[in-house]
Length: 234
Image (cartoon, rainbow, N blue to C red; front, top):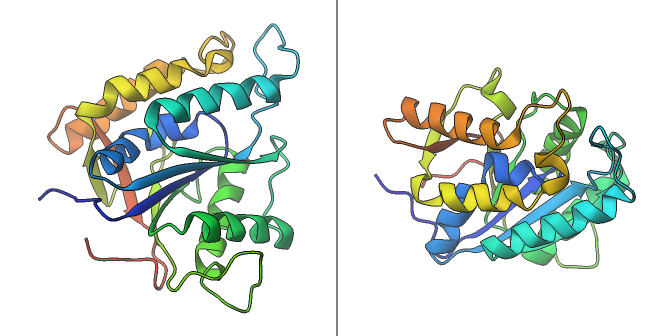
């Protein structure tokens, strides 16, 4: 079976500037190659992930890095600009993400798993689950009109695959070079050199392990979010 993304509009909602590269860039590339519109929404600035030698105005540096990575993919980029560690599931933040969805009008959203390791990832998961529902509710008013239907929602793998049972896999062997090129744009993080694991190794190890489980060389793992009207047949 081959998953076909043609005529879809696929958006990844991630907490930090390099999360899409690690968890779903291969799937976004597959969607793009099928003719889908693609976008990445980054909720946080990445301004607190300082290397051992601090970088001045790290938030601005990471904005440039994520823009360069999105350009390689050919995806739209939306940045909400929350400071790392401050992301919470609140009414104003929900409203902002609802408007993001209404502007892009996704048919499929890729979001963090609710149990991923970082509190920003966990908050992003809750926000994404809420906003994928309310973006189709006319009672929640923003500048743009409500979607006719909530988009489908897939939970992405967790970093290092901890406590994540895949529901299905997307083969990304043809996209691995692009995933690594996109990740290399995040120079402030790739070269951190502290107790954070080398990101290129994390990416390759995880894609290889998920690929082995799916009997292919490289794969990304997902689950359907178990939420009414956000599960679809493909």
